[in-house]
Image 1 (cartoon, rainbow, N blue to C red):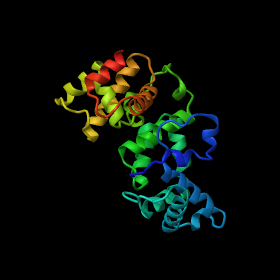
Image 2: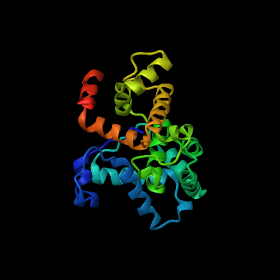
Image 3: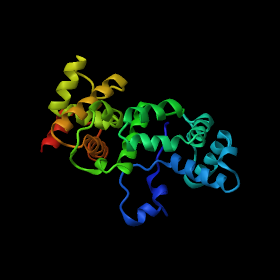
Image 4: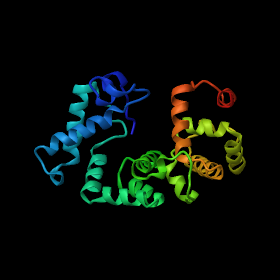
Length: 241
């Protein structure tokens, strides 16, 4: 949704910052959205809140805490949709689907019923819920066999996951061969990213590794360790050290 980030302003006074170092981006818009929701709930029942009211309160809080509010790609209809999702009890349904390893249905529940959420963000949500709601999501290795077709819906692919995955021959070669393309590094394409998700799931499961942890690790490694200007060859040298 084009959320911006202001790490220093977010970290100041944040409970999280008291215990551990904050590394990377903190999204300021969601913080303001959540705080606005809690503020409005003090005087209104959730069912009485409107998307417009929530949106305006979010802008006000964001301006006070962080400065200007970038509403590109983000509007009251998104918050109205989220309210409807919440009031219909679908948060509980989402949790149930994830806890039962039914990631495909959980993915489409989020993507199709909350406006403003696309493929990548829906997968981020499902993956993080797996970490929170399942024991196996925290394990380095997978001790039970899960459907690779289900795991695909919990493996978001951003620019960093894409670059790192394609730099590893057993993943990159299979993706490139199946799609008959060679320059995929910075392509934003759902078809390419779906294939990358599937190959990550396949290869990690073959090796008994948790593909969710690979996906999350690739994202963190890429964002924190690799400069955008570096080529795939340079990335691969770092990875193979």
